[in-house]
Image (cartoon, rainbow, N blue to C red; front, side, top):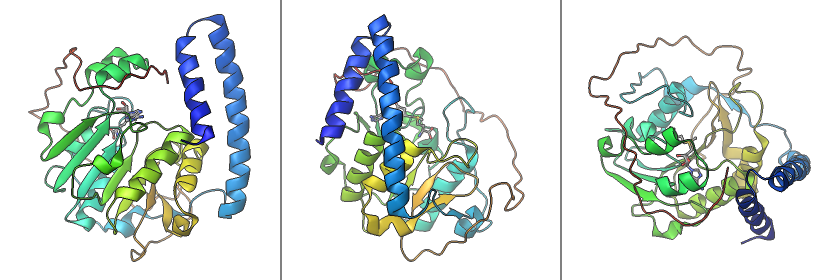
Length: 299
Ligand SMILES: C[S@@+](CC[C@H](N)C(=O)[O-])C[C@H]1O[C@@H](n2cnc3c(N)ncnc32)[C@H](O)[C@@H]1O
């Protein structure tokens, strides 16, 4: 463990212990200032080393053509990835076929359920309810954790904190499509990226959510810095920002892409139809599930 990630964990621990007290609030405010300064200096260094201040923007359509996408499980509830981001993952799964998918951070499991029939197997590596409670997630988010678990075909769920998990223990075969969407702090994105890279298949695609903010134009620096520092610089030329999404992707060398000039210039016109899934029960349990770790950290 690096000194940076050790101090990060100590501070996060203190933060959760002192939560609510005046000392805690002061400590958190001070820590945020220091963190912002560190992000700024990291940003300066990476902009210099990478040679640009944002990833090249590429066209969604050039990756997938005009094949339609269908989502069977979509709640429109907060924190879901957007429908077109689901389509991005589906399109990648189709291109990679056979596809063995790993998602870090699954929330309700919508993305996993929408991959039924498109992937051969899925693994979800996500916090257990107990861990989420300790980190102060809202009750409704905890209650609905992995809501769709039983509707996903060929799914293995690993209830764990990705910081603690030994990625060499991931069930075979090696993953060739990975969606990193767990903890979005710089240290964790870097950690998840390094681990995924070490254990994924030779020809694989990695997607990071929240590379940009929701406007698709403002770079989310903690995530971007985690991506760049998590990858060898030799892989940086395969990194792109996919238009219409907040996602960064690492694509195989052989895939061709088309640069898109500006997110404000629409690439194409989509048509969308929305209807209620007749089997879409959203009843939720309040009973904790999954074997959790024991750390107490608040995000
Ligand atoms: C933004 S949500 C993921 C949304 C989901 N990918 C989707 O497309 O619907 C973040 C998820 O990451 C999980 N998470 C946060 N920190 C984590 C960690 N260190 N290890 C594993 N999962 C984590 C949370 O429990 C939550 O389920």
